[in-house]
Image 1: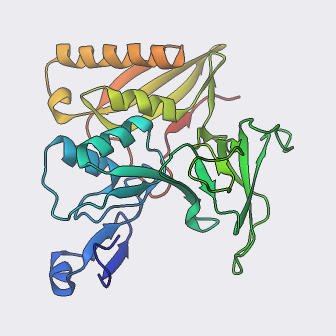
Image 2: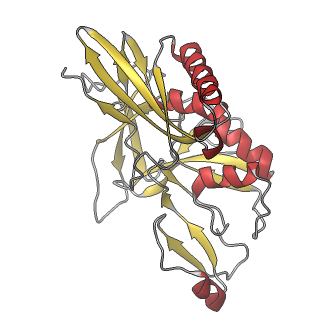
Length: 299
């Protein structure tokens, strides 16, 4: 995201260290970090240095930091970004944030994207055929039903794919968009077929837990779900990274945070989960999609 025509932009991964301050000074380039950020899902980064991803932007905005690059009026985002996160980004940074969908096996960002109406992501149908199937039967679902998205590339030459199973759960939106575009849309991805958990008979997606944690003050946006079976019963524990102030504070403060998270999870999911606080940066960060779930059940 350059700030003017002719700007030099160097595309970097989240873990790149080579583009240091000396290189920025000598080239006059703006640092734009792209790709997976500490294992929290892909994101298009903004022209800010040295902010690490959407979560980094939010932390700086909450702290009242002054950014050293003027923000554009819009920001394209991808990955595990909840509606609550998007609203906070917009309010804190005075921008319009639109969603974008892509996957590296197909082309990366650009398979589909929101217009300013933000009521679904328009599919680039000149280049992709998108279908929604039942992940169990592999047959097409009824119009408007949620299922697994499969993609066929039309114009990709080097590595075309035919009915590639994305594992992403969404639905097709075929009614006309107020923006006037006639391209079909997909709903924001609800979760993944390999992420969905059935705990005590209830379907649970990690994205639901993330939305809850984002609303609770005192937590970091990093968590992990441990699922185990005790006899015939399933039980789940949510490991949550707490801020340094909370983690090293008195036990009463920690218990209050655990209780707030527990009640919020019951309200959102309809089932209870054990909550355990861990120190900041305890949970592993990985490239690519974050490993949110450790399922220890022998099903």
